[in-house]
Amino acid sequence: MGCGPSSQVDTVTTDNKPDSSPTPEVANQANGNNEVAVKDDAPLMTATTMDELNTPAYTLTRLLLLGAAESGKTTLLEQIRLLYKQNYSDTEFMHRKAFIYNNILISIRKLINRMQETNTAYDNPENAKYAELIMGEEETQFACFTHDVCEAIQRVWHDTAVQKIYERRSEINLNDSSKYFLENLASINTLDFTPTPRDLIMSYVPTVGVQNVIFSVDNHVFQLFDIGGQRIDRRKWATMYDGISAIFFCIAISEYDQMMDEDPQMVTMMNSLNSYVLYIGFCSSPVVCSTVVVIGMYTNHKLVAVAIGNRLQDALALLEKINKEPKFEKTPFLLFLNEVDVFREKLPLMPLQDHWPDYKGNSEEDALKFVEELTRKSMSGRDDSLIRIYHTCMINTDDMSKILEKAFHAILKAT
Image 1: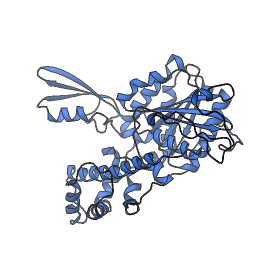
Image 2: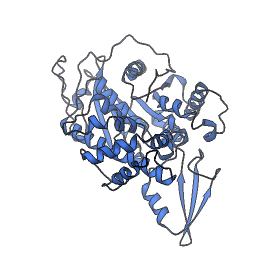
Image 3: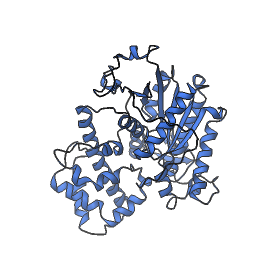
Image 4: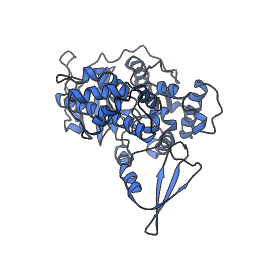
């Protein structure tokens, strides 16, 4: 993805180095294991349970990681696990491998479907038969591909016409990590494949329910809760609001031109019903409109209202809602404006003003400032001292190491 250096909006600096203190291993609620193990090479920590960690001898600071789906929350969590010496279990590696293979298949099928939808011919006509082979496979894949399917995926992926479709991947909500795995398919498609740290960072696994990790920074123990960002999961957020010392909120700013697609059941229903669909909004096509569009669907003489929104607008509305939560009145917010690299890459192809008419700038920096201002408007009423904004490329480990160092320093200073 070509990540450049991330810009920092806050000016907090520190000489502290990441975690030279005892490092409790991951305590993953999803795995049903709340015990804390300490690495063999770390100084002895006598606390072995979360209850013991919550005593005066071991101050436990609870953090909440929020954001819409595919905003970078999972990647941020992976960076923390890697940077602060969290181990992965064999089961986690097995599950992650399965997700990687399945995401590769999903990605190439999305590209093929888009070729068909736009009646685009393959640059190499022979690749059409390879596309047919791929589409004839099962829709899920949790292990190695056969030799024939692997070759077919590689040939289709490298077709010039497919590459042009990929350049406009936001039109099909294709995950930005797809290129990394499709380019590295040959090394991934082996029986002895074990995900590298880079693979773990690049792979997208949606958060289901509540995950948490426990780690230490400068002799201070943190517990970070990650809650699913899908709309169906957001109702669970309020159950985690008590006892939170700071909030990490991720926003994928590269999604300024993308619409939400979280409700496949609704899409299926709309496609299958013999009904009259009325679009009520400020544009003719929900694919390119930044404004929330309400679809009025008449069937059996009843009106069914369906809200479809721009992804960035949804994230900002979500942030505004959390900002107004009374329990967080004095809580520091650390905002990660993520995917800056993809944002810059997309601007020439998908001009910001086409989707956000209020934007009047002429450069990448103008565009970044515009999005940052939108973010600040969502935080209206909150004291500036409680807000830190970071421009991030979550997959850049070196960059995230520096950013997280500043972020945790800011939290410790505030608490």
